[in-house]
Length: 112
Length: 115
Image (cartoon, rainbow over all chains, first blue to last red; front, side, top):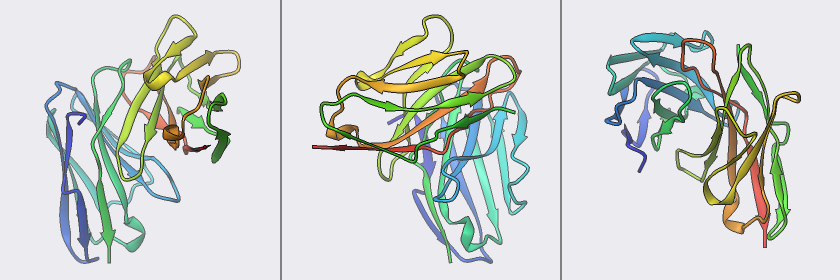
């Protein structure tokens, strides 16, 4: 148990659905991350929120939309996904540049 | 932009032998370096980090890593491998000199320890 909780653990969705992934941490961290893990790109950084700023990987399609309402919660909104978006989505948080990130267990997403 | 290279997709070692998992990095400023391990269907677990100071850092489960600035490397080592060390290992880097916490990972190295 790392203190970072992701829900749901598993999600199956159709290409026309809209769903959201949730991540929360109560570790007092000030940065939160979304990573995509797949066979093609093992750990791809998608988004970082730090001190209310956002950095995104420009290669992430617009069908992925992050939201960080406060420093403890992070969402990834999904819409009109493609089968190639099927992957393990990992959330992480950290406090300061010289500290390690703590990872959640991930959400296994399958797009059908 | 920072990047990490893990040149070996897989490392095979016999139990009881020493192991090394290689990592090289690229950052514009000074690096903060990390190693993580991932077991099947699990998130990433932190092993160790280099921030500053002694180039040899020790971490969990008997692992250690050596920071080499001239070779921009941060190889993970263990003197005597266990079958239970078999897992996926990731190296990561963060730029110490920018005002952001972007953490970039390598492609991972699968370690297989045989009995």
